[in-house]
Image (tube, protein in one colour):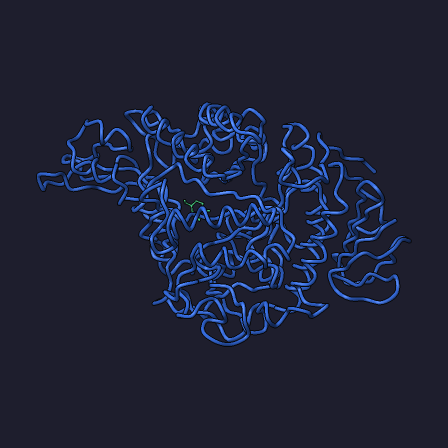
Length: 572
Ligand code: NOJ
């Protein structure tokens, strides 16, 4: 069986002093509005994060990634930023930020913040200026404004769709009250795209990166890193023109707005800025690109690391996992980055739910954003009755334990350590917030179900999230998943995560992995240096474990027969 080695070794010395800390970090994503609410307004805040740092420390994570906490009208959960160098007053102040950053540092936890460079919000000062300024002005040139087609410019400049549904162009009213130009927005209409050909835009983001790096931020997660540069010549191709060119267009880096080759010039400049700091600031790209083009984002001359969403899109299937792991480790080796692994985040159906659904139809091709099974469930209205909750959780625990044994960084999403399921149809339409729901009404129920505030206690106001209710309704069954319910319970998901993350810290050394022959298609086993061995039984028939000392298992069992849907770590 092949031995797979990636470049560097991970130091077990204190993570704070290690410039390579990011290579094999366990990074915990906090969606701030839904983590912990300190002031009772129903919205999570930075003081809430600070208050929960002891919890994060006990969990054993190395870094926190904070989704946007900037001033925002929340048209897209904070990914519509009004001001890149400030804190949303609903979430706190810059002083609260400094207090939180210092407390994390004291706890030995690194801090990563989200940067949203493709678009601002429509309330951003620059966009307001653009609306108030005439066609062709410098203010308009910071965004992408075009005249419409048709006799009176009444048609959008192209027929392109936005990611959230509906057109990718919005018409404005000119300052004199007449119907005017159109601006481009790949996402919601409240998220106008910046013009990255404009040096002023480039300079402003360098200022933003410096602003946060100077405040002690250790790294950045770059939102839609693959969309910034665009080629919008006079005559724009139609959707049909683009579709006709198929995958070749993407592979050539020639799509008008996705994953263009010239985007990497921006990241080379950012890298020079990151390297001015000691230790250098890190970055991870959110880039939903063809796997063959991902390494460019992860290069050491660029952002340094890129998310790989391949496991997230795979079914609970040994073959799919195996192929994905081998491919991604090879890619990481080629790029000089370390690999990244993720099962859940604020955009996708939680993996405990996905794995309780019937597997995907492999002939249907990959469905991004939620994995096929999750996406189908959202399309069908997200009924809890359609989920095998017990099986989903059992598999999710097995998958997470496997992930923690892989070389590279593991990105966790708040609540997965509690075994939370996605909240589906329990959220009434009237309470929904996601623009993906509103712009696509009746198509899919959107992403609110993974953004429901965390249950800290089994009762009380909003299950301990805060003293004043919760901005998204929490279902009754959250009580059983609460931190309080799981604390001290040896077999709880929380205890499993704590045990596994503590062991991972001790065991992790070189970024190498040797696949082991198991004689079974549905059993995946690999060994890390020093005899640390992870075995996952994806099937239903038990599997005889190799000899060694059992370190931890995702579900309890007796003897040396590993039951189905279970991972065990063995010290050989
Ligand atoms: C990706 C983010 O993860 C998602 O939540 C957001 O809606 C889009 N980018 C647009 O910023």
